[in-house]
Image (tube, rainbow, N blue to C red):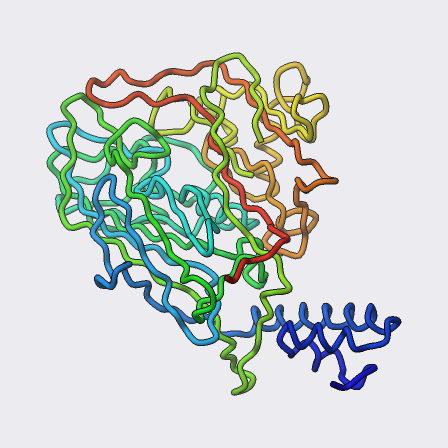
Length: 468
């Protein structure tokens, strides 16, 4: 074993972790710290190079059990896909594709607030334990957080076999990312507006496309990517199909009835998943680039415990996207009036919001509305100025770390993360006040929706990824 600093940091960084540690320990004590720092810098640089210069590749995810590449969509079913094994590969995201033919029966149906993301009521990814547990609506939130003038990139194309065009509500919104589509299948972005009418007896084809990034901070960031070269357990995706495709819950049901007689029937309905991965192949050299994932933290998605029930006129605290559901309607998360500032600025049913670093709200990071003399509409206006887009009414983007402290939030060099580790703000809570809630259940035969707040987080885990 060579001693002192006969090897340079690049050579030491290229070793496996065991050999690297043995070599550094062989150095004189006064040189160990210097070498450790130099090697850490070299690994970080090499990892960034891997993420930036490797060619993105795509491989299909087989249905678990070896039963083909597509799974049949059915209400209440859990669809399981294995991520494929590729030599030297690291998965950075999943392309989820669904093609669902549905026909409302007897009475018309409406598009609910979270369509098309609500075709799945939960999305889990397991890798030596839960790596991701969330609702697909976070995919839309992440897209809208990308920065100036970026519409969300995932959504739907809905076509119909009939000649009747959609009847769409007149809803003002700053982003041109959701739109009604014609019967011929032409569309102007992400799919049908919530509230769009689906005519009874007409067959519609819903084509949903969603990309779930594992490394959600930035395309060239390492935390969150998963090894898929056969090390440790094989990553596995679980998609939980909506248990009530036709229902009143704006988050969990894609469409809602207009009468007790409304039904829905399905034609062909399939789902397939593709994996986006990097294996170091690059255009600069035939030598593959290398990634050292053991030195990096990982990124995980969480679905927090709901604030349930949400009562009118009360501030309730929980703990950074939150979805406020007042259950007054299924076509939007929260009741909103009409106004000049677009969807989120119309959320008249939210009268106060508070993000606090403590469990009792004694002090606040952010506070708007009741008893503050600061209008709640200021929050939505500032959010629009940051992202040049409105989130859907009821979606509150509390923490959007990568888009802060930069002139253009599509430049991901800035960071304003909420530190909830010991020594930071581990007791952070959030609170809301609404004017009115409703246990929506006026349509016979359909379950009432519970007023609540659902919160979805993407969190850095500095313990790193458990590889075995």
